Length: 119
Image (cartoon, rainbow, N blue to C red; front, side, top):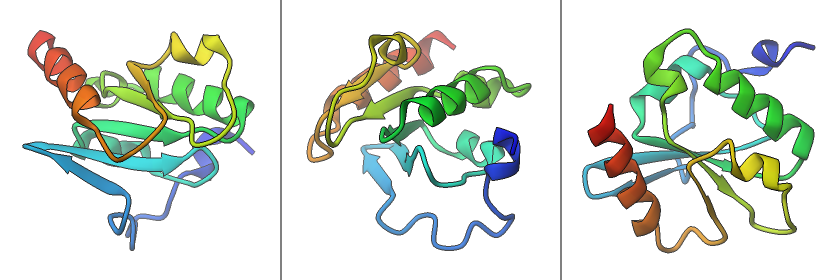
């Protein structure tokens, strides 16, 4: 199965419940590396928080986002949320930051502001 075949249905029902975090004017979407999401929907958010569980799929997801045709998708700030365990350093180099908790998103909001000002 190609990674693009794994992304969500068009309605995307229920996507926003408990997965959207707002910090000021910024809106972050949290997804698991194991759940489907349509890449075109990413551009509707200020940034994407990827919950890391499996190295291979996370790596493929990041590569797919970063190589997308639309600038609004491939330039989206990506943050790796590692709720348990450790991830390889190669993933850290491909994202804009990492998180261990979701209770304080000020750091990723600051990073996102910096990125948005440069674009």
